Image (tube, rainbow, N blue to C red):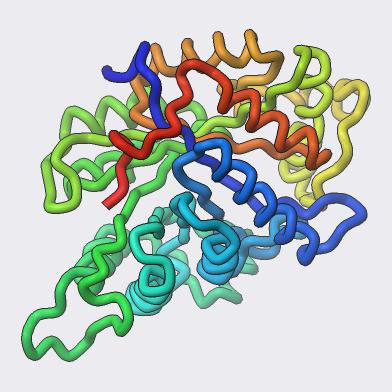
Length: 343
């Protein structure tokens, strides 16, 4: 393992949450404001996730939102965490991200996942079949081919896109994408913010099987985790109830807008419903500066992550910005791009 005591890059995963009482328009404005804020704080990346049919998430058209965020900022890397590749033609994604790279050269990341990011009926509306995920390894290699230099006489090419070498990442919550990322020599990001069970196994598989590539000479692992930081532990736990409500509502089959925090999550759901959510969120770090600092130290000791990606579903936008400020003030936080995977 590495980076157990040294400063490492920190990045941001944003779901463009739609708040109760607001609209997607306002959610996207909040995302742009947050991106500018964390850029000033020294975060390395600002990624957005592809979800469909979710009332509380405004980033379904992920490439479009990435372009908007990149245009609203100047130095932070902007990308997808991720694009659900089986929903799309690799050629279309190569063109989209080739265009983004042409507009914002050297600042675009392309993280790829194989989950649908939707329910089964929405999958069908996306023209995705049950077998789409089986083609994920082939689609990743086709996409990488389209982003490489075009061969002489190559008929199918991405314009823009060919020769852009937009950095690819594989995202996952199991050993499947970890194994593929290792075989292809790509950086790997694990979604510990909602699927913690295979974190250790996936990182071990990735590191032990990694094969160097033109993009990456040695393994580079990023762990995504929820961090809610505030002035006190009690305040942070109060803010955290918005995310807990969202997870519980999703598991009830009634996803909705991000709700204001509540005084007692035990009044919102019985223990049987909270147990599964508590397990899914078991890597969440919630508390004061000291609590968060200790939680991050424990996570880095366990994982040896090369980079941490922070997500924070906080209803109050001032409190959300403050949470990222607290994390950026920790000794482990590195604002230097040197050592962070770019291109």
